[in-house]
Length: 262
Length: 214
Image (cartoon, rainbow over all chains, first blue to last red):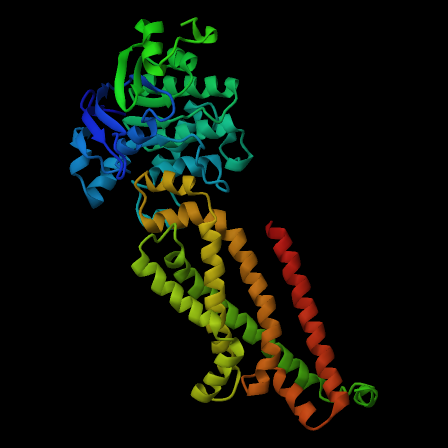
C-alpha cells in the first residue's frame, strides 16, 4: 500500500506557532519524524500544545515557523487544490469518531474513497468493484465485516472508532493522525481500538501519530513517545526507554503509583 | 349570524361536482407550488447555511433574498401575479412557490446548521469536493428533517390556497367568494364543509407521514 517506504512518513522541523493576541507561543521548535509502520504517541498535559500540533499537521492552522513534510511535500507551501491533494494523503481519526450517523458502516468506509472517485459515482452511490472490495477488506481488517450493513449510529463507541479506522484504510493514507482516539471510550474498547490501530500500522506499513493522555495506554501501544510540555518537545524516545524521569519532565510531577509499572 | 347559520341548512349540493373540481384545483396549487419551492429551496439552502458557506459575501445576500421572499405573504404575491399573468391558478402557484421558497430554505438552512461539525470535517478532509460532501455526508443526515419540513409546508399551503381564489388566483376560494357575494348560504356551507374535509385529510396524511420519518 505504501510503495514509497521512507519517503511518505512525516517530518516536522522547527515547527512554531503563536496564536494572535497570545504572548507565549503554543508551539516552539517542534522537531520529530515518524517512519512508515511506526506508531508514535504524543503525550502531554492539557494545554501542552497537542491539539495545536495536530491542527498544524493538517494545516487547519497556518503555522508561522518551520517545515511540515508529508509524503515528501512541504505542507506550508501548498495552496488550493494541491493542499487538498496533500490532505488526502493523511488519514484522520477523531475523539468523537465523526461517522455520518445515518450511513451504514460500509458507506462510511467508502467515504474514504471520495477524494479518488468521480463525482457522478458519488451522486449515484455507484462505487466500482475495486472500491467496494477495498471497503469490505478494510472493515474485515478492523474485525467488523459482519457489521457492514449496520447503520453507524447503531454501533457501539468502540465499533464506531474501528469503522473510522477502516475509513482511513480505504483512504489508503500512508500517515494516520489520531487526536485522542480513545478519550471517549471505556478502558476495554480503548485497548481494543489501539490494538486495531497498531495492527493495521504494522501490516500495511502506515505511520501513526496519536495523541493520548493516559501514559499506561501510550507505553503499551506505541513504539516511541514524544512528550510535549509548554509547546516544546521535552521527551522523544523509544517506549522501552521511557522512565519516571521522562514522566516527570512531561507532567512536572512524579508518576502516580498506578502507572509506575512502566 | 345565527340567522345566517339557520338559513344555510341544508347545504346545497347542486354544484357538488364543480366544487370538488375547485377543491382539487386548490390542492394542486398547493402541491405544485410547494414542489417548485422545495426544488428552489434545496438549491439555495446550502448557500445560506453558515457551516457550508462561511463566506459572508455569498451567504448574507442569499439570506436577504430568502428573508424578503418569506416576508411577502403568498396572498400578496398572488395579487401581484394576478395583475402580471392574469386570473387563474398559475398566479396562485407562483405566489405559493415564491413565499414558500423563502420560508422553506430558511428552515432547511437552520436544519443544516444544527448538524454536528465533526462528520462533515472528517469527510471534507478525505479530499471530497463540495458537491461530494453535500450529497454523500450531508443529505443522508438531513433528509428526514427536510422531508418533514416539506410536508409541513404542504399542509400549510393547502390552507393558504383555499383563500387564493378570493383574489382570482384559482381554486375553491373563488366559489367561497361568489357564494358569499350572492348570500347563497346553503352553497357557502357546502364550500366550507369541503374545505374542512380537505384540510383535515391533508393534515392527517401529512402528520402520519411525518411520524414515519422520525
